[in-house]
Image 1 (cartoon, rainbow, N blue to C red):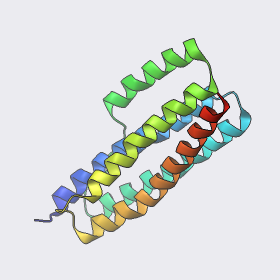
Image 2 (image 1 turned 90 degrees about the vertical axis):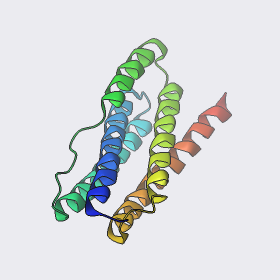
Image 3 (image 1 turned 180 degrees about the vertical axis):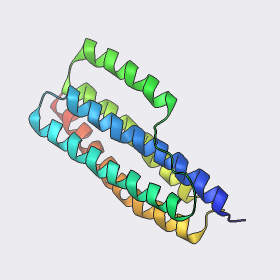
Length: 151
């Protein structure tokens, strides 16, 4: 049975994951050596921040309190990525990490869209956000494949 409470719980979970993505792209931009990669990651961070803002606005419009922080697990993951990139220091490693994060966020949105308890309004908000997530995932997947083709 669809409920506003369920919608808000699902969307706040997606907001958390998307904030993780924003943070991940910002970290990737700091780590990237190639200027075009840095610019690409910064652009993706901005796009994901817009997704966060749209989902947060949806939560507010339904009378809820929007999530405004990422997950603890992602913070721990970033520490690990920082350590590994300090040891590895390669753009290929950064791209692989970003693409791995993209697989995670795409899967999380895909799972949410399979939720039969969502109201139509919540489903629409998630589908709109998912379009941006899918574009980012596909772009990072192509970028990773490009790096692998060089090796």
